[in-house]
Image (cartoon, rainbow, N blue to C red; front, side, top):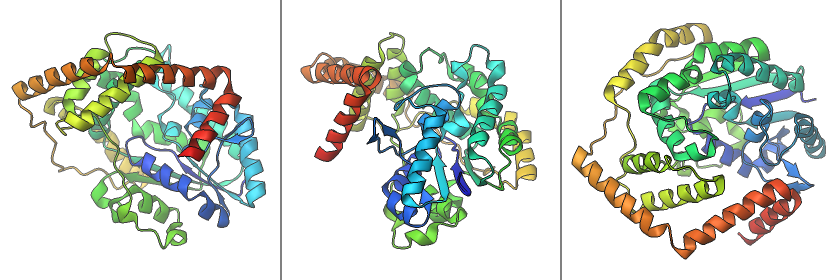
Length: 378
């Protein structure tokens, strides 16, 4: 068992990927200071994971590569800690806060009960460790605005169609934005010795970046004293507005997951070359409704959990593309996509994705060996 646990639970869209990439790249420095940022192993081969979302998913009985049981995950952690002489465990996954996803449930009313069960399961593995829980929260309107584009982008990988329009999706996802109830569950069932709940407002973060902000709050910044955090990219590439609209249209034609992954690759490539650069924006009226719906809850969050609160006088982003320009860009994107789809390169990508999908599920040892070979080449 570990004496101490740093548990970064999200939220998604708050610089989590950048922080996880940084921690994974500096595993050796952390280990020299007695802190294990664990990897996963498949058939004895390191996966070189950057985050721990497969563990978070396993807590709600969803299996992802490397398809380990909860017992196996924590057995691996203890073996790594023993080898590296670490007594502190550092886990990071936005899935800790975000799962179970409400669209995976037969009955959405079970969302909070299943969330509580997940936390209890995690607690049973962490035992009596001194836990410091770290959670960044984005204002509900900002989180939802970003999530709409993300869900449309990856809807074909979610197992079911869940998007009809922005207003419908907001009502569907509301439980994920009930921060008071969710944080209460973490406090009552995990009983962390310390909870750091931080509003994700870039201007207020230390060095305006999640990485130094998180390290400072965990009192780890000193061990990275020679790191220039200003050079670290804290942004996640998003599809522009017209690409999101095109993908929503494309999602009306279902396909296999390997084909869906190629669809996304192609949309991303086209967006980088011909995108407007204007991010997807929900309507002003819907954004105002979201702010009003959660205003009282956010006041409760401030009072109960020493939460600084979200910026109340922020400028709401608007999409500066007029309707005709947006329509023209959508038509151009549609044309470019259907021009690129039948090419030999696209067919190659589809075969490659089917091969990866097959080996990952049916031949995990071969999949692990291929991943290892690819890392050596790169």
